[in-house]
Image 1 (tube, rainbow, N blue to C red):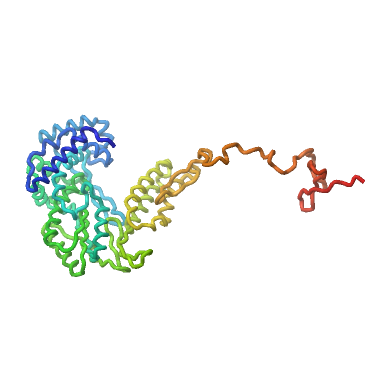
Image 2: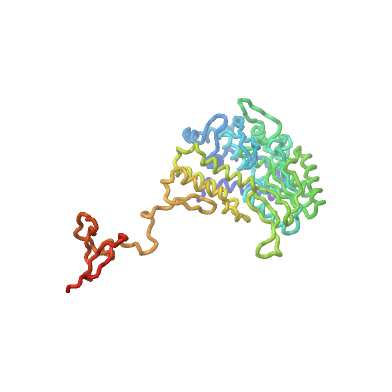
Length: 483
């Protein structure tokens, strides 16, 4: 998609800030507030918020309501409020969503649409500055970095001999980050008092749950646009300390951690270092997900970023072992749950085409993520295939002529035979009449059936006549002797 002139100006602003931060690692930026309420920055922020199609906040204002109110009118009001210092965020709406494949609930905080626009604009301005300082071990919620990049590090390091793995997770990371220490980490690069005031207002906005507003001194509520960036800024201190005191190779995707070591003793030292560094930051590991795994043939594996990893032997070359990965049980269960939710009986009155589109949209994204790795068993998952096929044909079978599964079970309606173009010339002309090609003689003089006599006579070129045999068949009798 071609960028507009305003988007190119925003990209140029980000490049300028990135180059300035990279040229001077000790520079502290003091003039950023005027760039936050630039009209082109806010317009780009609105475009991203609109594309995300998020839910409404506590004011119940949706994306459609904003469009009806007037986007230009809303952006003009935000420019005036930010410029004069009158902007104040509303508390976020607290909801709980189930974690994929688990019984736990994840707390999410949904800001209002107005607040999401301001958060996106502020993130657009300050993200290039902090991106310069991020280390190679960090992969989560960073531009031009993905979960598959982190998974590739696991494959490379395991092939190189680091097969003692420390698998862990930071307990309640987004809710436990201290505000004062987070602001201290931000002030290492930004000293603009207006920008710092905006960030403090976002952190202190609080969340509303059950009609009660709770404001704490810790946490960057998960669900906000700027929360992942603030989490990375604070956990950057963990990355720096690990580079000095850690053992092995650290792979971090937000609050999910994996440390790869060569020996068990090194893995135990790495786990102890992680506990000590996080304790200094006011965080702690989640004991239920903390363990040391040895990747060996026939041994146990580990789950990381939705994949299950296991050390296996290659089939074609028996002397070669490698780290294979396929969707974990939680990932498969999440797919089943989503398909079950989309095709639930309460949606029977919904048009089949709409259900098919929803199933297709989910399966395209799900299979697009899990297509990398060693996942041949996905095509034999009968439960997933069955639910995907019934999503299109199970409710009203008459609506679809035939179904086929594309990739991992995408239900697609084939055109009927009448609508489908001919692939060869066999049927390019109409079928000739059966009367002209039939080998059966024509029927003449059909009369009333008589007992013991055939009820029809047939013309025969040889001069014989047809009569009925004892079995009921019509047989040809020889012509009578004229003598």
